[in-house]
Image (cartoon, rainbow, N blue to C red; front, side, top):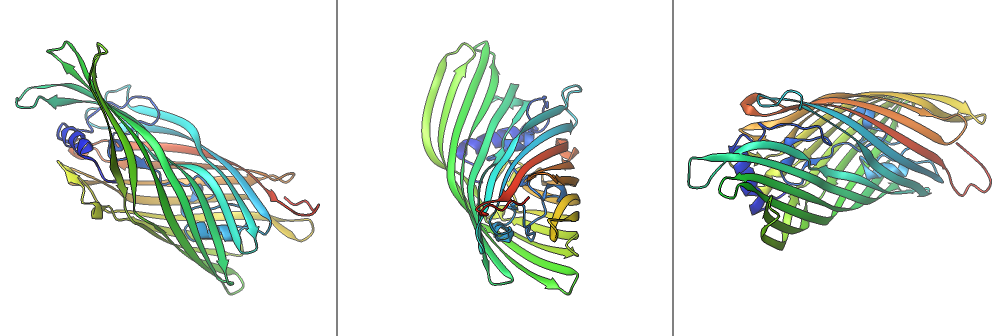
Length: 423
């Protein structure tokens, strides 16, 4: 994520003026950390892995589309399709030296994923869908120094928007123990960033509004190796890679006053943001088709972008996660083993790409999940709880404690069965 000259100016100014000593207002998960670049990059896939801390690079499932690794789509049952809708509600509490009591929380509820996956033939699984890629939403106050003087004035900074993705993912089974996958996505979105400064000379606020419209293709791939270990255990290993990308952008800037006077307006095209190479690896062990233990590691190479400024820098990020699942199954139609419900738990830790005052912003938390599959039809519903903390209160920064609750509704069935019906 490459920051433009305009964004460097905002960051240098804001960080130098205690950027995160702001007021958190109750509006759609405000996060002062999302001022940088394209905002907070989403780490959740909003799928079967949500209750296991989104740990799923090596996971394979016959009835669910697991997009943590596109290679897993080849594991779906023949002639099978899956439609899934995911929603998430989130509540965040903020702690910091200058957080105003009574204005220290935010909440949000929204649709997060819509997807359709199909087993096209015995060796090919494919899926399309829509998901958020990043979210930028912040609102805080700070002091801004007047250039050439030692005087300061009140300023307010507000940002909204983010980047979404539509994707087409494919998994191909190659032989008995190997699968490869590729996902082609298109990133698009817009962000609005506003700075309001009280002008004593104009007796009105000076408002600078920047609107950015972004788009770019985005490529990622993966592979999985899977085999049985004796009669009771199954092993799977997985790896993923996302190629660095540059988001094209149209950028407009408008300077006006509260008296509705427009002082300037400009539109430019720019190679505005860059995303780095990303790597991931995972392992999954399953016993008796019932107990699953899995672990993931993800790495993003932000240091290659060489982005830094006054008291901030983009640095390499790492994410570690582990999960456990207990699957309850039953026999149906005489001899078919069908899952009726499952329980999940997970832990995660990550240090983000953002470093402020020589402090790399980290995040840690735990998850729990519960899923049910109907005995009468092809419907299923899954619930996941995520409780985590991000940031710190040292050096005047902000600590965010977030509680997220997601619901995934799925319809899974067979197609082209020539009159036969399965659930």
